[in-house]
Amino acid sequence: MTKIVILTGAGISAESGLGTFRDKDGIWTRYDLAEVATPEGFARDPALVHEFYNARRRNAAEAIPNAAHAALARLEHALPGEVRIVTQNIDDLHERAGSRAVWHMHGQITRARCAACGETWTAPMTMRADDPCPSCAAPATRPDIVWFGEFPYHMDAIWDVLRAAELFVAIGTSGSVYPAAAFVQDAARAGARTLELNLEPSETVGDFAEARHGPASEIVPAWVD
Ligand code: BJW
Image 1 (cartoon, rainbow, N blue to C red):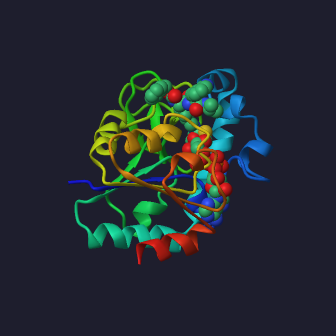
Image 2 (image 1 turned 90 degrees about the vertical axis):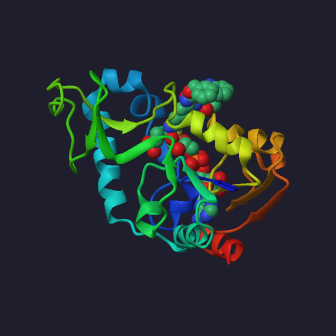
């Protein structure tokens, strides 16, 4: 049974070379999120959105997991069945480090989805909006990503594990995007201990019982080991 729920955000992949969103030089300083991370933006300019995610798919494929991803995989193997990672990240660095109990609440860069019928499939490295769906043939291919205004994946299962958790840990997330930003309150209300591991205090640091600050590649292995 899951006892430890770990929420990860862009900060855990920063030292693997993948950009965060809201830091200095973050992705949202270079792109308008309304244009590339909303269904309305995709409807206006699908080619721009595909260009954005095609570039990020290439970056994610070239990145390698860092010491923080590896430490979480060790934790899962040391405590079989007790650890659940809920990641906001669309990269697959947790899986490539060896973690198996991972839910991607904001989708996966390696997956494509048909906007017409909902079918999902392994994304080619370069996608276009008029690529036909392998199931219904509609030319309505989009990245399998949860954009602003869309409902994140696995929410019922996530709320279940938050209610049952003994420990909730948030790693490398600014605490500025909901519903993930409220998980600490959900877990604390249900009686879990709460710990923030982040480069600097997040927007929700005050909701955590304990916090440790520094680069994920240092503070996550130090916490796990
Ligand atoms: C390091 C480090 C190192 C750096 N070591 N640390 C008003 C109030 C409340 C909610 C809303 C509202 N208006 C709209 C909403 C809802 C909206 C929302 O939250 N908006 C906010 C802007 C206010 N949310 C949604 O629309 C979500 N859906 C939804 O709410 O559905 C309805 C619903 C209601 C109730 C229950 C359930 C559902 C969907 C959100 C989709 C988010 N999508 C994105 C883009 C797609 C994925 C992608 O392209 O990659 O997801 S936005 C972007 O932000 C991305 C991330 O997953 C997400 C979170 O960012 P994250 O990971 O925290 O990154 P940063 O950059 O913010 O922070 C990095 C942190 O790491 C920093 O703190 C650094 O210090 C740290 N760091 N280097 C350790 N080396």
